[in-house]
Each structure stands twice: as structure tokens, then as C-alpha cells.
Length: 202
Image (cartoon, rainbow, N blue to C red):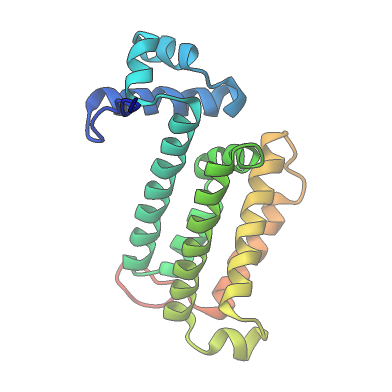
């Protein structure tokens, strides 16, 4: 006997978006382990059965959250690429506490959910390629000539600094943070002068 296909609500449904918003709130406030159908339903003011209609399993819900986060990251990278000063726009993205806080929760989640891990790994590789494109656009050959490092390496370094600042900040540790940010800014100033609002280098 054939098994009936799972019912999944429309991708553009306002109710689906409400469920994802409620899930994100829970993750931000209490971590990914707090996510359950009942808790998400209560946060969204919906019946648990309606959450199941759109996301038959918790894995379905968490994977959808991971995909939505990836889409938001793609949007922010696109904005950086279109910026007059893409290098600093990318640094702001890499050190954005709001974005990284959720990303760290999903990195922890990925250790326990294979589908999320596979999706995140693929998206991270694609993001690294786009970040490298920004460095090449902004710096050309100056990066290797001045610092002896490839764009891929700079991407890892800046992302690592950004994550460290957010992780420690979440614990209430701030010692050395201002100095680290100042160092990155001075480093970027040396590699590529900042662009003023009138489009000229400083």
C-alpha cells in the first residue's frame, strides 16, 4: 500500500513565515535545544498541528531555518559586493553579533543533525568563494604583494576574529576586543584606504 506524501504548506505562506520567526526568537533567546513543535506553536500563537502541517518533523523546521539564514547571509554579501567600500562592508558582516550569534547555534546544532550539517557545509563553502571575490575586487594583487597571504586565507582570518569577538562578548568577556577591532581597521586601512561618502579615498 502506497504511503501518502507528507503535507507541507506553501513556501510563501504568512503562517510559515510566522513559524520561522518564532523559531528564530527561541533560538536567539534560549538556544537551538529549546526548539520543539509545542514551544514554537506557543510562541507563534498557533496550534501544534499547524506547525506540523508546515514542518512535519523538527528536523524539517531546523533545516528550513538554516536555509533562511543562508538566504539572509547571501543578501548581506550581495549588499557588500555592491557597496562603494566592499572590504569594510564585509568586515562589518563578519563581525555582526546578531548574525553570528544565530550562526553559532546552528554550528552547534550541525554536530547533531546531519541534514543541517550538510547544508551548512555547502553554504559555507559558497560563502567563502563570495568573500574571496570581494577581497579580489577590493585589493587585486595588493594582498599577496603586501601581506603574502591569499584571499582565501584573509577570509578565514577575518571570519575567525569576528566569531571570537562575538563568542567572548556573549560570555561578557571584552578584554582586548577594542584593540583587536582597531588592529583590523588599521590593517584594512593599510591594504585599501577607506572610501568616503563622496566616493573618494581617505
